Image 1 (tube, rainbow, N blue to C red):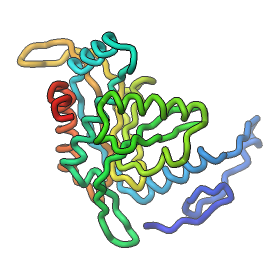
Image 2 (image 1 turned 180 degrees about the horizontal axis):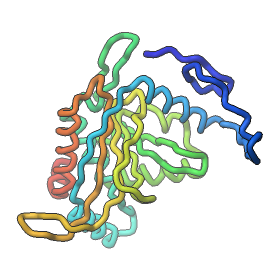
Image 3 (image 1 turned 90 degrees about the horizontal axis):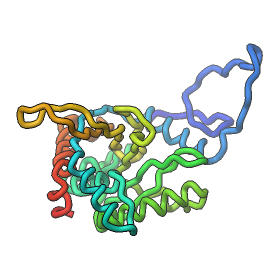
Image 4 (image 1 turned 90 degrees about the vertical axis):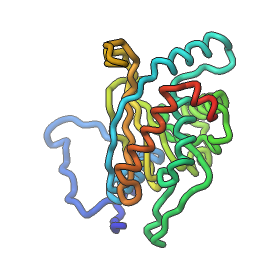
Length: 256
């Protein structure tokens, strides 16, 4: 791993020249880089410097899954489903089949650590900035239980009540910008994890299916991965398997 120097802000960086005094050209507003944002910055710099990022992009036809989601929401009031709990459940099933994606590299010991537990983080936009709460033992939870966990964690995050332990121990992360907008996104790996799944906005558009042009709801997906451990073929197979489960919700439920 590269060596860092430590600046007064606490953010690790390589030696760079000092920034100019921007107020010489006009009015500025200065805000201290406080605890959570500073820690996020530190982690993102470490990830981008240490990890050789590669991204693999694809699309998933979530038409049938979205219909099922709407039916479930209309049939009960206990849990409100978005697409994300289904996607997390599909990912967990494939992390078992693709252990490299659920691993970490220890550069100090020159070892690959294959984790036999499945804790999935999800990026949450909060008033205090980006937080990544972690759903522990997601492989043991139903889709409904994943949805309930997400709701509770996200709510505590917005209220500033997340315990630090609720943001530790993740083995894989999913980030969803689709609710805000955009198509494909290339996310930064949540180091020391080796992969992250980024989701864009699911939109209806014409596609060719069984030789005919039909309107389907398509979800852009990007898996960014650590090329020190995960090869392009590994990432493609993982995402192919996730997509196959999401495009056949019955299969997803049976395997769950």
